[in-house]
Amino acid sequence: MLVTAFILGLMGSFHCVGMCGPIAFLLPLDRSSSFLKYSQLFLYHIGRLATYSILGILFGLVGKGLYLFGFQQHLSIAIGIMMIVIVLLPETLLKKYTISKPIYRLIAKVKSALGSQLKKRTPDTFFTIGFLNGFLPCGLVYMALLGAVGEANVWQGSLYMILFGVGTIPLMTTAIYLGNFLKGGVRSRIRKLIPVFVVLVGVLFILRGLGLGIPYVSPKPVNQVIDATYDCPTSIELVKDNS
Image (tube, rainbow, N blue to C red):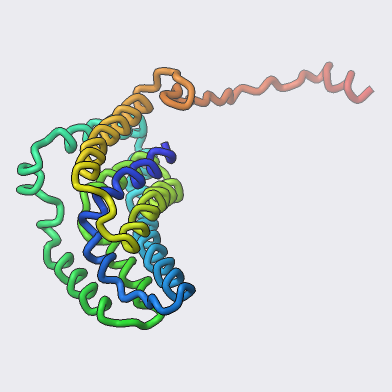
């Protein structure tokens, strides 16, 4: 399932360029030096990955808590269904009940902090911009967070989000250097494939939860039975052993 995180990030980066592209294009990169330019861009991506890692730990912790209560199989099925339903719901309905509304003030503060950081050129600026960028609301990030919950493990949840972030790096980096390098028609067709892939990931989570015995896709749940009985040796057997 971790592979799906990277592919989700790779395909979803076409969406990310549209959402986070304006911020990336405004990065105050020092283009007079290739070393400085690449190191600053590297720090920006590391900042985003740090945020995704933290979010992965938090949501992986939620998944672990549900796992300890015995909801692992049901959790995987529920997450798969949620992914599919969210993709199939009309976009207007999702905007009406967007997850960012209850924390609108916090998002506004993040955007304000981003604006002030974009005016600076200190060494920590690019890491901070990337770190704050990771907290901005994004539908693809929400999908990845559902996947992190499904991992039901703190560190695997963190790794899931890191791989998602790594998947977005190639296209985001290319966009920063080349700008709008894809034609509108090509970009539109690729974006249409993103919901299809999200549905496929959702189906994989459902199959994993069903435990159909399919290797690597839907393994059967492991139920360990510990036999607490112990046959004590008789006195005659002990005598034989000692002799």
